Image 1 (cartoon, rainbow, N blue to C red):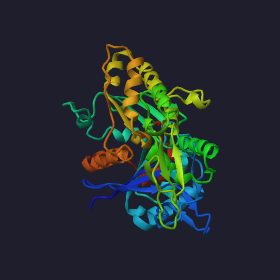
Image 2: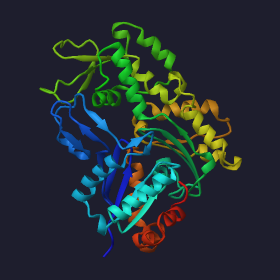
Image 3: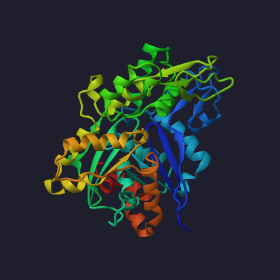
Length: 400
């Protein structure tokens, strides 16, 4: 009887989790303990589905700057996840971690997984690595193998953005770049802007995140769009109204055209905020962060690799993570890269149908199609851990 494999893409904002299967999608679960200010009730992970009033929710998250530092919170979420839906003692676990995770945090992962939950085996890796196991040739619409010789994965998530070049399926460590810009920064900055211009929304993280996801886009021409935002009436094709939920008749906000006749609802005007907030991904210096934007970080990653593979990396760029869902994201990166990259290199950029679950899908494909001996070689068995400790994990999983 084969051992079931639990695949856990343990994101800082959302966990993507499910059993390995050839025909299955993961569950998306908030990686947080959330308190309702009104009823003082605490929601752990997927218990948030039971919430009916999303105003002034207080989030406690186990991740800080992309690193898992609060194991008390994470254990509470994992307790509900593993003990309610899975049987750790009879399963193996494939789990993701951030690039260049600190060794002391990696040791904590191993200790909690093997000693507290007693998984039979574990494989710990980074999300961009799992993306390679998907059918990338289908995304690029060519007849290459399932894993091109060179791929550059841009993973832009909640806490940060990583650009990770791969050669023959292995990450090129000297080419990895990290930007301290992600979805959390965009949401927090939008809260500040809205609170200054309209209503005090500093405690409305859930609502503002929804505003960001429904209203924001990335501009191809910022100055042109700023000129449009200055116009009045129908000449301004950018301005929108976000109708705030009242949590009596409606529990979810929605977008409507500017100037709608209904005046009995509280609305939030979204004008240049729609594109200036996600513009931070392209130019972090706009808000005082002394780092490159995503297009420039891609070129830095490529230039740090051997010159013989520069063309291949530029021709095989995959965008994943929650920020890849922002309209205009891929087109803007391609446009800016064309200005930075020598003309003799072709640029091919693709975004999978669901960038958020792409890493989970890769892990699912890897475990579903691998033989028992391949999995035995990749995973660390519990008996190996009990004999050698975290040293065996460092040897098998490497530095990342």
